[in-house]
Every structure is written in C-alpha cells, then in structure tokens.
Image (cartoon, rainbow, N blue to C red):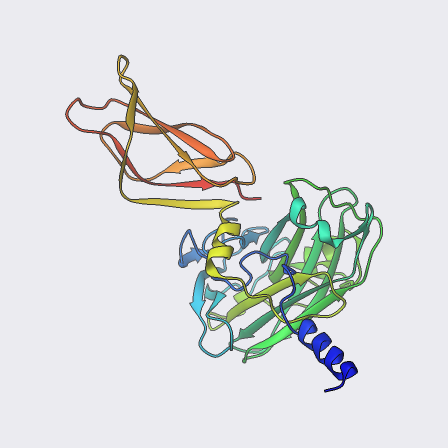
Length: 341
C-alpha cells in the first residue's frame, strides 16, 4: 500500500469511527430507565415518566392517552432499546392549544461545543432512528431558550421499518449559550398539535421563536389506538451531516443520567446511626457524585420512626429520624434524588 493510500485509509477509518464524545444527547440509545420501563394512562400531565432525560410535554389537555415505555429492539443492528409511544385512547377533535411532544433538555455546560462565538453557533446535525405502525409525519425541533430565543424545525415522514432520519441546521447568529447549569437548548419531537403550533411554516434555519411554525404539517399520534411510534439512536453533534451513532457503555450512560436523577435502592435496609441521643434524633449522610443542582429528595420505604431529608447538597443528602423506639434501629430502604432540567 502506498503512503497516499495508507493516509486515505486512515482518514476513512477516522471518519467512520467514534472520535471523542461527539453526541450531546444523553441516553440517546434509550438504555437507562431509572424511574420505570412502562407507564400507562399518560396524556394529562408533563413529566419524566420512563426513559431518563426524555420528558413528555402537553399543551391544552387532550382526551388522548398513551403508554410510554422502554421497548425491546430486535430488528435494528446495534440497538437493543427504544422509546415507544402507544396510543391507548384516541382524540380526533384537536383543540388549538393541544400538543404532545417529548423533549430532551440540554444543560449549558454540555452545549458549549455548539458555539462558534459568544453569539454565533456552528452548524449542527440531529439524527435518530424511528419506525411506526403506519406512515406518520412528525417534526423535530432544535430550540435555544435563553437570551434571543431561536428555533428551527423539520418534518419527517416515519415509515413502518427502521430508518435513520436527519436534520442539519446551518450556523446561526444572535444565539446565546451560557456556560452554566441552566437549560440552554431543547430537542423536541412533536407527535400531536393543534393550530396554535401548526398554522405556520417550518423553518429549517434558526429563526425567532414562533409557536405557529413549530409543528406545521404533522399528523397526530392520537388519531387511532392502532398508532405507535418508536425512536432510538438520537444524536446531536457539531457537523454538517450525520455521522455514525456514538455508542456509549451502559455504565457511562447511567453516570451521565445520574447528574439529573438518581434512584437509590439500598437493597438491604440502611440503618441510621445516632449522632445525638438525648433528643432522639438520628442522622445518616449519603455522599454521591455531583448532581446538576441540590436535588429534591423523595423517600420511599422506611422502618422504625419517621425518616425525613434534613438537607441536600449537590453531592450529599442527610436524613433524620424521630419517634424511634429504643429496641429497633431506624432504616431507609429507597429514595430518589431529582435535579432535572
């Protein structure tokens, strides 16, 4: 092999390999579901229900309902899981303000590679794999939500077999991306919307926020109880075209997710030890890797006495117990820590 051919081959290998951490999306292969793997009867409230880092959003209340789950993938090479939306109650009378979308919020610290200057972005590409029970139009939206709000959207017609879909947005000006732990950017997948969000025209380049242009042309997942949609391999990268999906290990992905949410199951009871016995107060501190912000702690099963979270920090939580009997030790079995965007 000549030197020129060797260098060309090296360039091809580098182009087609995973170079560094290019994917800004966390849990894009839908591996981590700390809260639950399936939730039914959804459609009347926003929230993180199953897959980590993917939040469901609703506009005006719709009669439509769905099941959100972590589905098993057997027919797409390289992927084992997907985010699945399955319509369980149809709604064909769509009010203007109705909406159903799932959203990935991006922290400012994680979006810095998108910047060209303090007010200019570089070109970026969103890509994902999807399939549906029938041909279905959805829109994807890249949206900056700080300073001069900007949005860009694209319509995709999803087929009945797995395929990769892409959306490249050119470099843009008048865009602010602060280097902090706040929400700076959103990646939205629109599945259902009323005229408030569909009466305009999609823009494939960044424009000032305009609700009418966010989901123009989409169908509705709520049109029939036969309707399903599965998505995986979500990637956002600095590039003018999509490159191969960056696979990360489950351990890496879980650690990234735990910056925002932790489900702590102690397996065996974790006993709270005495710090001050005179007033019957016991304390236990758990230390963990740093979260995005001081989390909200929700306590699950406990035993002996009343256990509460006295205080939380970005990397620790302290529990207290009162009303403990003298013969048994107090314990906490599980709890969650939430500092989601």
